[in-house]
Image 1 (spheres, rainbow, N blue to C red):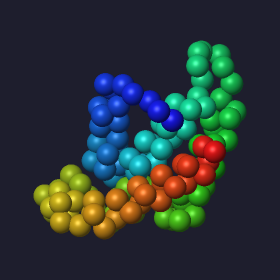
Image 2 (cartoon, one colour):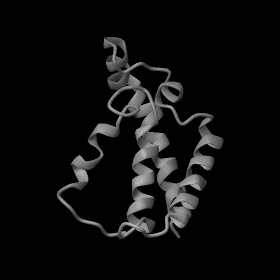
Image 3 (cartoon, rainbow, N blue to C red):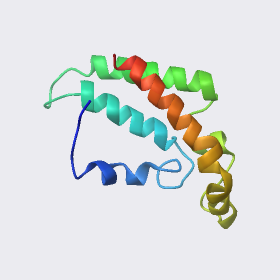
Image 4 (cartoon, helix red, strand yellow):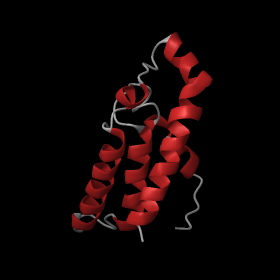
Length: 114
């Protein structure tokens, strides 16, 4: 997918750390579902969602199998709304947890989007 837009850096900014640092659904998941939607989602109101829902569900199922959760707080063990959580992000969470998880998600997306 070769997509270029000035919106790309900002459109998903509020999704990180489990939806705006609330520890909810992992931003890697929501971002991955956005990628699936860009490729297979509706082009206009009324279009069928069957394909995008099937592929999105497949992604979620595979993610859960690998990580046992889709919730940021459960995956990282960190509350990003605390000073300790913010320090943990800088010290190890991004490098040791999120970056490897992102690489796994990219590989999974590549398999699904073939």
